[in-house]
Image (cartoon, rainbow, N blue to C red; front, side, top):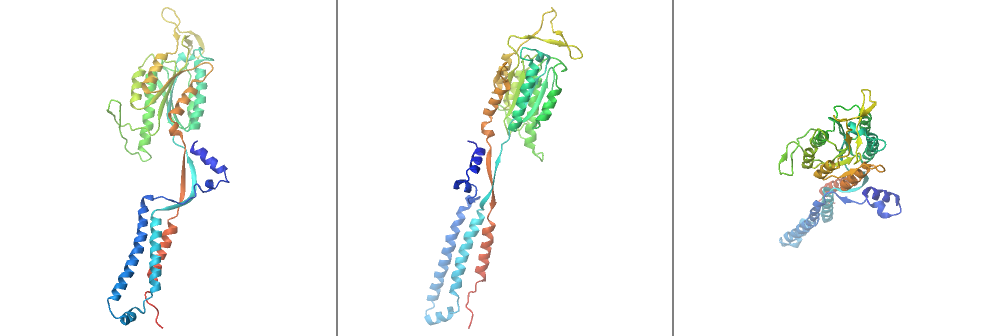
Length: 389
């Protein structure tokens, strides 16, 4: 059961005394100063030792009559009261220095979500209809569902749209901007053509590295640090990530113009996992052509007039995922591929996702320090001599 559920259960169970006092009990913020309590018996022992020394000194004078005349005006009651008050003041001062706290309010603090970059294939091969109603339309539905869930989890999401080149938006928590960006993307208008998975992964890593640097610099723009790679060397100016970072690649996997496995190796050095989602059929589908106005205009053929087929390249996508410690899933007609990815991500960040309960308690040291100072002032104000007749 998460801390958030615990707090809700406690609030509902008003008849349980433990619930009512769980966050109202007195606590010590500085338990490391408990040794200060030793000063209390030491102060009491000091007063007793001083009183004993006075008695011995008076006894050494010899004549009881002379001693009685010398101490006759001493206010012994005031001395006893001053001793008791001073010891009590030491006790209160010690407790005050240990920062006694009480009551206060409890809040549920959600931890930071993941940094995720969606690398989305919008090449013309995504217009194939081997996945109902088409690869691109199915992809749009997948992304809408995933962005809604990521927004509820509190993840920061970036977006890379690619064909032969890559473009996109850096990580943020504004899912509305990402959805608007996706609405404007269309495989029929993406130029240049091709499927540059390597370029897309490179841009995705750039967004994640920028997020690391921004977090490390903080609001005042502090310095960043380097992190070691698997070879023991340092990646200069790239700080470690404060949260898990993930790239989700959605494509048919048919890379034509780049080397995605090399970029996957770079991601592995940075500790970035890549989850690959294959969209398309294993048997393949002819690649459709479109005219200048975006209307269907037959199918792409080679120099011999044979139709060019597009099929999901599972081998490449599995290799990319395996290199980074991620995983691969194929979109099926009756199942959303990103649903499976969401399960992996939830498992990946299970510990990170747990909410924490923090208690903001009231400081009670003033109720101890002020009386202690008043008691010390009282001990100094008590008269040592009796008033004359």
